[in-house]
Amino acid sequence: MQFRYDDKTISVNVATRADLAAKVTARWQAGDGFALATINLDHLAKLEVDPAFVDAYARQDFVVADGWPIVTLARTAGTPVELMPGSDMVQPLCEWAAIAGVKVGFVGSHDQALADAKRVLTERVPGLDIVYAHAPAMGFDPEGAPAAAILAALTAAEVRMCFLALGAPKQEQLAARGRQVAPSVGFASIGAGLDFFGGHQVRAPKLARQLKVEWLWRALTSPRRMVPRYWQAGKLLPRHMIEARRQRRQG
Image (tube, rainbow, N blue to C red; front, side):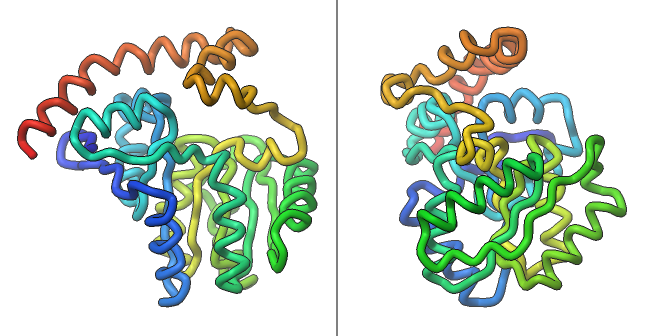
């Protein structure tokens, strides 16, 4: 599935978890970094109105489907993909990093959440080496001097797998910048993915996720924040569905 914005195209270009594992491992073995984004409906809504976000997203190396609407669009377009939410990919990426023997870093969220995520993941993943954790101050600018300092620190610490928990669009923008100035680092933009390990945020119950109604659970538990977001994003679905069918016809 492709999403087009003027002269830029964003493609969901990694279809399966196995494919993602192979791609990131190959980058580590070659001494190269990467930028991984997990596209969802909220991102599509932001991409509609933020050219800087479009530019950052177009510079991501790997894009996976975060949310059943994206999976459905991809299937409709004739390019089926697996569901790979950022929150579900943190531990697998840590496992692959441990196997590859690469160092891991965290950027984002807050100090206690990062400490809890480090503790839980280190317990769960044998051999995991988390060497850097930093929670930026409020108002963090991914194009500012503090961001440059973070990227320099990641390189100095020899981090090869860095989780960005800054929220969109800041995390994708920092990843895009990092590809230029910290080319050996692999960046994964995972939103609140680190917060779940210490219980700082709560995921939808497993049944809600299995029934594909995680969005409804979120709307009911946080209506002021989530209902307007889902409303804006949901309005885009019909147009994207028409585009997905067009892409299928064109092969």
